Length: 453
Image (cartoon, rainbow, N blue to C red; front, side):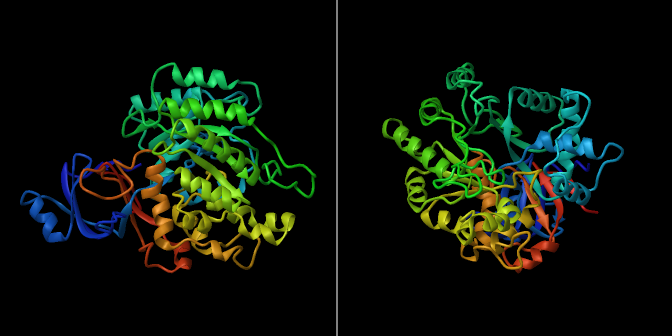
């Protein structure tokens, strides 16, 4: 992995998309000691730094570093060790093999992976993701074990990826752990969402409300045709309400895995009851996935509450044709991001990787085209997002969902010097061109973590 540092003070010159509403484009930026100190026209930036400050030409269009709002980083690392025991894969090899083995176990070793295995996996997988322009991820599986490994890796200087860890308590969805034990664990040290530093911090608490879509476990409002069942309710409403109340009162954001319309309704019902006594405004509660048949009133109520959506368009690409076969034409509305956006819900994009495609340019293409595996035509084309909306979902809005929008997600003076240099302009390029786009250089805190040369 290339971890070359630029000079402590340097100027980057090129076509820059800032994702800053006030100044969306720039010709240059200056950075010093890991942060942006100036951005604007080349003359303005040169005037802001000492004479003789080194200048570097961008290798392509510059965008804020991509943030994947739903990537299982340690599990992706273990899969890389398991599937490539004899060599380090190229980014393309890793991407293709993950797609081929999406349903396979993460680890096939004779015993459970050790902390050393997990750290080795992290060292392997981080540069592979940097090769796609990814500078940060939100890991939705932050168990006690994974958090401990992240802490060890961070202390050893092994984390090049900025990680937001979502506390998750194994056993809760199987009713082996009580809500009270979750609250005791969360409250025991007096911290909340956002605690940490620029490399490793806590995000929202994760709770399951239902099961998986393709296993027909998602909690619908009408039965699955093949089973006659609504799906799985992974938590009772009163249990979810106790956890949500605790989170709202103690500085924790809450994310609810809710794939089916029934699970979404249950979560929003609970959020409204909590909001009546502890306002949720500013707490960044969110629905996770929320792709199967959200009712219009649920979407509207989520918007009124300020609830976010953590969406993974690659799931729609993977499953939409199958869902149309199972549920009929109405399933064309799977993952209705246009409806959520038009209602005023802020959307953070991610991949659910490594189990679904995770190249941000590829996922943005799915979002903009609604293409689906197994279908010759787009499924639900009225739900497309614009190029700007798709890019915001991987930068500005993903940072907001990760509670790091004051430090990254846009390119602005004072924020971290995280960016990706792309082979194309993602706002100007035709949708189809994204299939051939690539990251040419990735920079985190002014440090080059990937260079295609």
